[in-house]
Length: 516
Image (cartoon, rainbow, N blue to C red):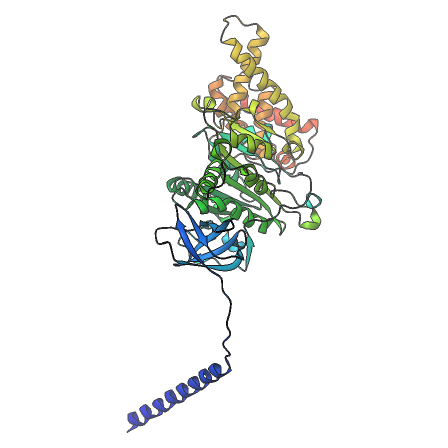
């Protein structure tokens, strides 16, 4: 009897819940007043490789997002009198002519926020690393106006790459745009990765944007960042060569908007575009498919503008605007060392300097293969740590004289003592500027090594022993001149006694080596 009464009681409770639920639903239905809503619907007229042409949608706006069946998104690119050209942000294999297209009423945007740090995402902000959903409370358009001139502040703080040849001779400041260019497989990405790794514990947010690269290359970059503990402060935006051309086109703009989110909150941001040559090619492909008139090398007429409007967003904001900065290191590929080709010259004219990597130096094993004569920084010298300025002038002069004499010395057998001395010093400078990948160096240790070679301390050391000698000098300076090192790192101006201290420590470390 007890079990039967319990069942009856449960049944009554269930009926009561159902009655209450149905009563709420009835009330909602009675109160609901259906209204007719006007909705624009377009029809797909043509499906191409990465693009579609749509009829209808008379009120659609440029750069608006439209939605296709299967939740495929498109980016309105052309608006012609009879049709619109749409760049697809997804696969085209499921699209057919005659299907409906609906407006979304919003421009292309991307989610932003702190939750993206340490993650790998695509150009739409969707995770690719199988680490779960990324929570964000805000979205920003991928196309945004660059900060006006009055909102900008001069570049005054250095962005240390950890590479001696760059920090001493081609310095980069926070808020600068420094182009990295060179032939294929000369170490362009390696310089960018070393720069990211060197930002550990410097409160700099790093964004690496892969545009049109092979998936295996992107996976290697991610693995290297994780191995060197750089992922916690890095965002990887990946648009590989297997992705739609539309995703490759919007990827750098989306990454820039993510960087601006942090910059507007007073943070310093470093963004790598790897590389803009492939970005230009994806834009050319889309433009030709959408029947835009071609220009030089079949690129559309606004190819300069697509890069300038993006790189102009990199800046150092004034203190009242937050004081943040966005530093860009765009990468571009040259062919047969031709820096005067179309896309490289465009980017050289947009950026504030360039780092040129020479295949000739790369083949000789001089890494990083930076050609100092063809590289320049038009802004970073003003932000360079003061200790570098006492070394960089003599270093650049000695190295330039050496490179000029080296080419002529091959034609003669007899050299006077002065020429031989310049060559001996130059060989040691070249050797000291070599640096293994994934081993960025603190500024104080760089200064010690460069002072040792320009001050003549290493003149008696055989060229093949320069690497081991440098390691000894770095260790000795860390241990015996810690106070001077801290002043160098903080950007203080050094006095003669500080330089004498470094040179004495370097000389002791050199004399302690056998055979010297």
